[in-house]
Length: 114
Image (cartoon, rainbow, N blue to C red; front, side, top):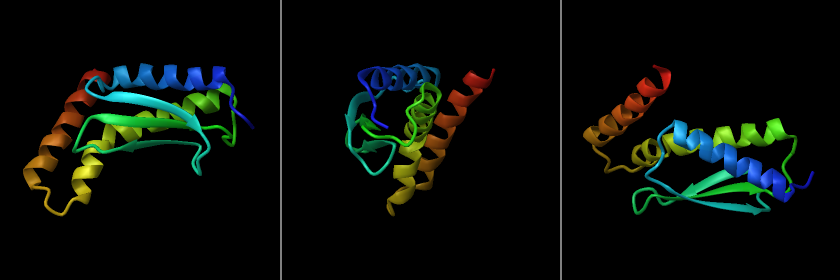
């Protein structure tokens, strides 16, 4: 099922709405709509910059509005945890760096859940 420009705009709007809720304002998001093996994805060079490519497949499995919003929701959660994921994969990451990022996540969740 092919995505339309309306699907892509819905995906972007939902992603940006949730990014604001999760206080991801320090990132530059670049949105793309192209063929990919995944329905949606993020790609980042987290430790070099705060730029994240956010993609929506041209042919997702389901292009119903709620499915498009669910894809955006999943990718914003991936973005929210991205820095912690990157730190955990580097063998030279210190315990202090992981603790700091975990507490950054906790502070956001405390505000969102209050």
